[in-house]
Amino acid sequence: MSKFRTCLLTLAVLSPNTWAQPATEAQRQIASLIQQNLEDHLYQLPPRTQGHYGIRLFRMTGYDKYANSALIDLYAVTNAQSWYACQLDDPKFVEQASLEAISELGNGPRAKARKKALQPFPEFLFYTNILLRFGSRIDEFGLIGPCHDKMIRALTKQDLKTGLTDKAMIKSWSAQLVNYVYWAKQLGVGDYREDYKRAFQETYPDDADAKLSKAQFRNKIYGMTHFVFAASEYYQQEVSAKEFAWILDYFDANLDRILKDTTPDIIAEVGISFLLAGQTDHRVVALTRETIVNSFNAKENIIPSPRGNPNLALGEHRNVLAMMLINWPNTLHPGPYLAELKATRKYLPHWVKLKQAGQQAPTQAEKK
Image (cartoon, rainbow, N blue to C red; front, side, top):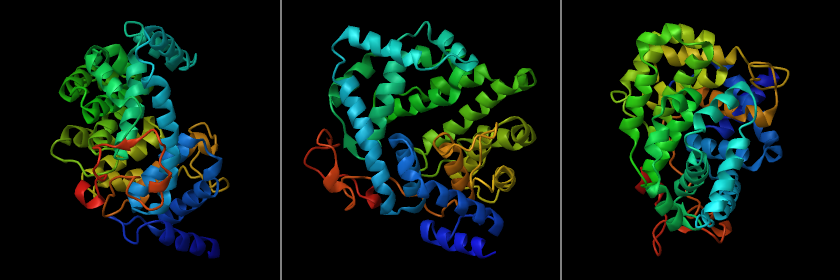
């Protein structure tokens, strides 16, 4: 019991003192063990994985100490945007970078399906998974990266709608496409939200669920959670339960299959979707928490992959989601806006500038 008491003390230091809908003491103990394990080894994780963790912990707690992990991420994405966006005038570069992006998908069954879906859209990943991804992350920090205007002009000229609404593409990576849709809106290069929602619902009509394989059912649920996540700007604000009732009601009605046929990552995201919609006392929250903690490996202090892999770098996403599901705060914290935080403002990359030259980055109060 002394170990658990220590964990609870650690949790009190690293997390808010109150939670929207308190988890059980045993669940909080598990979240504390996961958190301590990740933070003990945080510097060993890849830069973007450190950033993924730090950004989410900042948005859960508002603690500036997590901003330096976000700063590491900023350096990584700024360097990447400099490389890709500043060479947009070279068609051969775009073609080669597009081919490389596709080749990096791998050769497994899912990768092969994605490559096949991408055949009509050979440059799609370059403009979405590269330019939109890096540009939106820098934007989240209240900043503008290198060759920003050139990147925005190029993205605005692209026909992203065709690739985003293609059924084969949706069946290959529905959640990623949702991200691209909302990143495009965020950067002001196109509003494809209604187009994508319509295409998604046509690709996955609820009355055809019985025909879905386990993999396709997972893809459907994963995509649905990302409608909610992207609308929240990735845990920076709550969303409308009314607007996303079509998703929340579906999760509630199909919870048994979700718990049986999906993965810990997806199960945690289903529970978090209700939390983002302010439904903290919904039965789905309690049942997803219960399922998630049952996957906890006490020897490794981690929720391993479905195949039992305890690798921290590969499992950070799964485990930070579990922590968020258990320790959901009463208040979300937008940002971090790295130009306004004392911990980071002196260390920004020289290649970035504030969104509006000559003005301060938005304060937390202004963002709220």
